Image 1 (cartoon, helix red, strand yellow):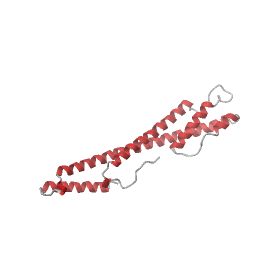
Image 2 (cartoon, rainbow, N blue to C red):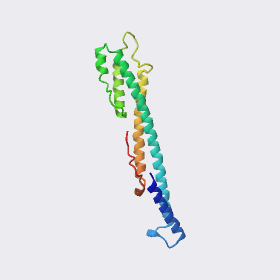
Image 3 (cartoon, rainbow, N blue to C red):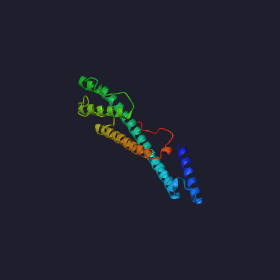
Image 4 (cartoon, one colour):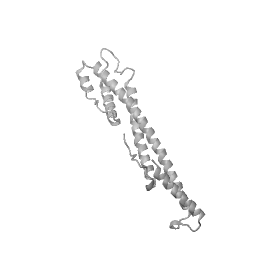
Amino acid sequence: MFDEFDFSVTQLTAIKDAMQNIPAYRPDNKEPAFVLGLIEASNLARGTYGSKETTLKLARGNCKGACKDGRKLAIKAYGLMKDLYRSDPGATESIVSIPTKGHSVPRTIKRMTKTSEVWAQLPNMPDTTSPFVAGETTKENFDTALATLRTHQAAVSQANTLFQIAEGKLPGHMMPTRNSSARL
């Protein structure tokens, strides 16, 4: 990915070495210290870029994991709600309004948000005095999973912004050859 970058740094290093060994060789009237500064700035920008790229990948992975976990909880809650409240027309009307399509983070958040809203309005489970629970999952656990997913989504957004800033600071001729812009 950084072949052109490495080649440019190698060129700068060769120019700096030539400038140090041949006192009369001064391209654009620059000193060897100037070229050394270019090399150091390029290496610093590359290191920052690599660090921010790793942070972004970690944030994406954490978000995907939280999305998968949240989606499983939403599917489980939806199925149990439909089954337990099938004889309650009001509850059934609310339950079937929960979106069930899509695997993306925004769609999973939308689904979980609507599930949480419906869950809060459900009457106690039929023939009991207990509020609805989805197996071992209470509404509080469900809402915690939703908050976790939202936190991870925000972390991806922040990491992506910092990554793009670092990418923008790479010297123009040293940009990575692939498009590494945001996605999720």
